[in-house]
Length: 192
Image (cartoon, rainbow, N blue to C red):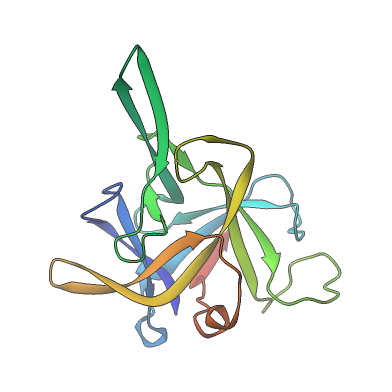
């Protein structure tokens, strides 16, 4: 499966941002092209390298969005809530133009998917897990040290208009057998 997005095709729920989905292996297209930028190193090392992924066709970034809810009750109160995915009710993953939205997280950390000695550096054909740090819990309270969630693909589908898509989400449940079956590929990466 390929991590994919379609320019200007948006979720009907949640953030209403450009949707992200897992495309079938037989359906590789320009919608599966991503630029990768290493944020703090020239060498990609496990556990210490943060990356951003930019969708080539739309120039939007792979993010998780959270909304700021402001309500008035004995003064002004605000809380932050991450948008939920359309079907599985996990954290929504989308593509967004980060200059237009101040409530997003775009820095992904990668770890090797298999336990073992990997000499610390990312190599060709390595299978990796991407994770992102959430700064608020599901109730809107700030997490002092943050909470990590993994980018995941699974067999749950959602529809937009007449089209059906396989959902991509983030959640912090244990990585296991379903993740081996549902691994997805970053189609082609352009290193910056």
